[in-house]
Length: 231
Image (cartoon, rainbow, N blue to C red):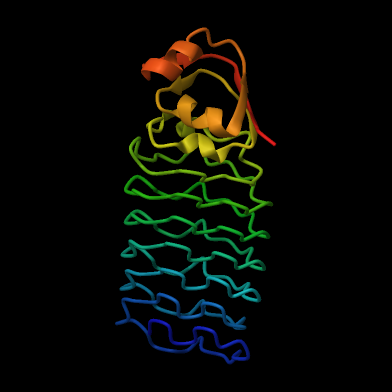
């Protein structure tokens, strides 16, 4: 079914009774389409790929909370640019998810709780909520791997200045400071972040080792550091 209705801007017929229990790939199925009909009856128990499934489907806003996505690994850009979507997804079993970058990027209306999600296997979550300007849910229950890639995960969302605690436990050598336009950080772990940040940020705060760090790249902890985007 991959790409089946991709770009079908006028298509909006009912498909809720389709039997898709053997389908394992729903990538791009409704991407950039005008589709907005119920799909809650679909048996998605064998689906492994939800890559771009509703990306750019700007009218889509249907309840998918009962979908069985327990076998799905790829959630890349699933709802990217789905600007109308704002339905519950908390019952999704995403315990098998590995790839989630851009999942809700630019989904400007989305603001539903995801606190039940098991994201322990996620390896890539770059820009997952970037530009999801209304998203302001508590994700403190998430247990995400410390080596997961989360660059710009909350960029331009309401969590950008108040990320969950686990965010500060992610490996600090991967450039995750690009998430911030303006933010106070308490006990920031700095290694390669400061040399990168000096190109884009003005840095204020109480870190006596910053100058030394810039030259030799050693790791230090800086409490109450403040960074502001240049320009």
